[in-house]
Every structure is written in C-alpha cells, then in structure tokens.
Length: 365
Image 1 (cartoon, rainbow, N blue to C red):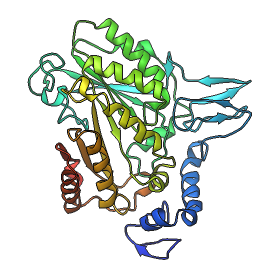
Image 2 (cartoon, helix red, strand yellow):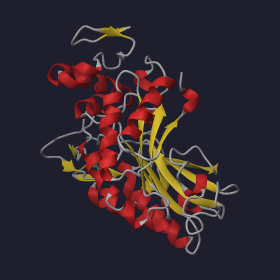
Image 3 (cartoon, rainbow, N blue to C red):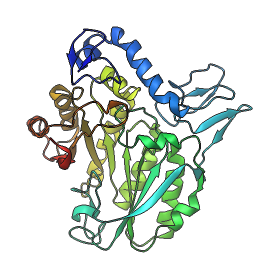
Image 4 (spheres, rainbow, N blue to C red):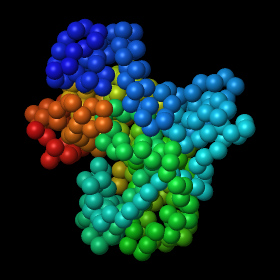
C-alpha cells in the first residue's frame, strides 16, 4: 500500500514511483507536479540523462521530436543522443546510429500481427507472400537504444543503460542484413523517433536494393516525431505495405506527463494526420493503435476517451489493449486483471471501434 502525497489515500494502485494517485494527477495537477517532476528526475539520474528537455536560450535546437531541445554547450539532448560541441550538434546521424537488430521468424509477436501481412496475410498478394501467416519468412526487428519519452512503466527500460555508451553502427550494416527471406523491417525500441533520419535512410536503401519484391517498412512509435519526418514514414509504409503503430499512452495530458514525462499533444496530432491517409491503402491497414493497461492509472475513462478519439477518425482502425506486467519504476503495481481488460474491450467497442483486441493475454491475472 502506497500513500498519495497529495490527498493522503493509500492503495496498492498508487505506485511509489510517483507517490500520487490518478485522481490527484487529473484534478490537482498543480499540487502533483512537483512529485511528478521529481519522479522523472530520479528515474533518469542513474543513466546520466537530463531530468527534462534542455531549454538553454543560447543552445542549439534539435527539432526531431516534440521536445525540441535547446542543448547548451557541452550538454546533451533529452534522448541522450546529441551533444553540443563547439556550437555544433554531434552524435548519431543518417549514416550512423545507436541500435541493434535481429531476425525474427514470421509470424512474430508484433502488436499488429493480427492485422498485418506477416501475421495474417493482409494485402495478399501485393504486400504479402501468403494469404495467411508468412511461414518461412522473417522480420528484421530493429531496436533503437534511445527514446523521446521517459515512461516510468517502460517494458524495455534496459536500453537506457546503453544510450550514452553504445557503439554506433553503420546504416550499411543494417541494410546488408536484409536477406531474401526478410519480408518486413520493423523499427521499435526505445523508440525510432530520435533516430528517424537513420531509419528513413536505411529504409530507402533497402527498398532500392530489394526492388520488385515484397519488403514492408513498419514502425512502432510513441508518435512524438516532427511532422516532416512523419510524412516520410507514411510514404515509406504506404509504398511498401507496412503499418505505423502508435502507442497512445493516455488521453488526459496531465496523466500522460505523469507517466511519460512529456505532453501527448504531438502524438494526438500525428495520429490524426496518419488517420487522414488510411483511405489511400485500406488493406493492410496503414495505422494501428495500442494502449498499455497500467493498473491504477489507465482506467475506464482513459480507454473511453482514447476509443472515442480513434473512432472519430475511422472506426476501422485496429486497437490493441495490452496487459501490463510490472517493470522499471512501476514494478510495485499489480498485473492487469482479465476482467478489467475485457471491460476495456467492451468500452472500446461501444465507442464504435470495429477491430479491438486484447494483447499479452498470458499476463492477465
């Protein structure tokens, strides 16, 4: 049982990572803000990452994501990838990045596998090798070792241990691993956002070298990228038969800041932009969404608001509700219950969504 430092309520659904309950985050943001800021600062300190996006008026600005860091001389960006050295940004580039990758036999555990070509044959025969799961083919899973957010429940939090120290890898190394059995490339992490110039460069090279065959470009992202980069992502995915999956962490902005450290305004704007182009290639779906059902923080109201937002854009957008397992700073919370997940599915469908799925079912209690 953890006590909320704002209202005094004690509950197993209040995480020690925040020491603030959902109701106070929503309704008392001014009182909760200092605890939230401290929580994120403490969580980033062991990895040498800035507690918040730098805002030096004399610094160099990076415009790749919603944070738009203004990095001071000798300082680093919020994601930890870029440094201001003698008035110039140094770090990763379109040619070199901090990442790792591996081949994953299809069908794989992609969040969108239930609607994508590799998992179910959507878009066959133009975008898929089979009318069902692509057995015998592989996904090149590309993990980027940095992120534009700071999710306190991060399922892949270990990447932070390598953000500052990982050896950079060349774009050609990645493209050379796209073999004849590779039918899709999926960028995730961390998040691809801070290294999108690299991912876009790699995708173009791979598609050029593997022309006249199926090679889908897919993304799993928090959606915080610059609009111009989003446009390039959409073109690559539309052309290749890939999909863009957005993690919609929360609807309430105060809650999103509490959980991730950053506003969700850019994510919502970008999701709407991609939704505006799904009619250009309905099958396979260009856009999918997911939300992690974090006990105590993502409640029925959040799911209702997110679902109504998605449905207002297109009722056919696939939406995955993901079971939570305790990780990173929120390791003191319970796993998502089956009853709650089923209730959230009912809510999403009542909002008008036609394709709703519960993911990570094996984690549900």
